[in-house]
Length: 311
Image (spheres, rainbow, N blue to C red):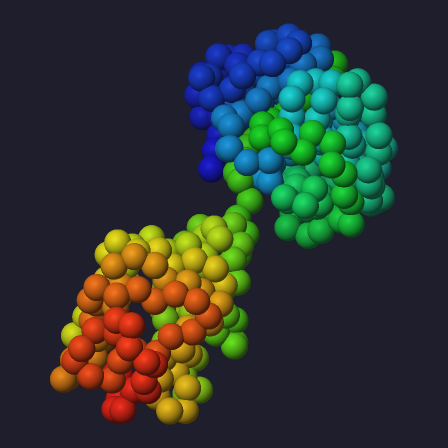
């Protein structure tokens, strides 16, 4: 995530190493003595640091001495002043525009009686090229899809020869995060989020392993061997677990794998105290049962657990 509160000496915005003047006049965007940004005469574009994803959002506090403005202070998929998608308030409405090789196309608008001034203006585009504009946390423009510049990862602002002093404050940009969750039936559904929140995995009354207040990143890949030690703690080793994974405890007490595959130096052994520990076997395919004795599960027929397993 990149944020800028513009708390520094009065200077051209591009003096900061965090901002790149792509084209136009450097003096068209300047940090003023009140630690906000004013726009002056001149057209150009400024990019903030690359967030590394074309699915991203830009947010800015919009402050203008008059409400209708020609510039775009909130831009995504910004290549230069002739190629970007940006949001603004102009002609008594919130607007979402595409500029493709210099040509403007209005993608959506929302007529309002007047801007609050200041307003928090938010624009996002997801991996499916769907756009949403929010104003002060409420959706203003949605239901817009456009594949223009779909691989562009840069964000920022575009000035358009329209003077405003001040114009903006508190700029923010970041990549979007998706969601991967374990559903009620125990299936792990992959997304593109990062692991966050309070992670808790519990064995419900139905025997299904479910997640607590957390999300899991990527395509449901867990590096290393999963070992359940005597105290029930899951410890990493050398295998990988991938695919849509469901692990359930059936009525017979057996642990059954869903659509996942587990490879590497993995075996599940039930010790005398009921704990599952790793050995040297492999578990692959759509389902597998843990051996119900103290021997590793290596090429043996599937057997059900004969006593309680501690999770």
